[in-house]
Image (cartoon, rainbow, N blue to C red; front, side, top):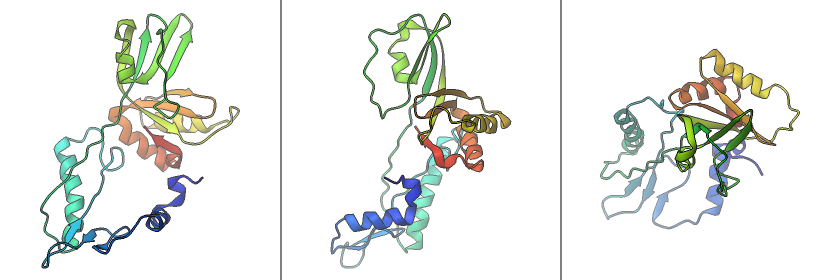
Length: 221
């Protein structure tokens, strides 16, 4: 099955349009910048939704007021182009989870069941040390075991299956981030690779990786 980035926007819209039902009161729907729905005898209703995404449209250090201004501006611009007058605004906020690197006094027992499609978690035991790389809420649930911790990391995953003997990919990604001064913590599972970067440097990291043509492999969490 193809990934979304492999389909492209136009092909994705075409496939969705084929599957979604239509209605007589929807005058312009999927594929248009603004949806047009029959309203009153004198006016139609214009519906518009757009997203601004951290690391792509704004930096993690951008003040919230500026993010909100940009989010509304994108929608208002399309409404104005369609000759509409804004009446309401519906706002959705999705906050990504942060990752934590912690040193523990002992191995957590019991260790909770974790979904295979969730955020990456690594428990490393050895060399007289127990370390946990995990979402903040999981680390906080073992606060009595935490000796030292560093919060505020963001996880990036290479969204592709690479054989264990693959050479060079992580080296390229690490070098790209090193050249722009972004610290990186790398860990791998059997089939894929993950690395953590400081949240405040996420935008710089994504821009540099995209410029190095590695952005297409990244699945941000």
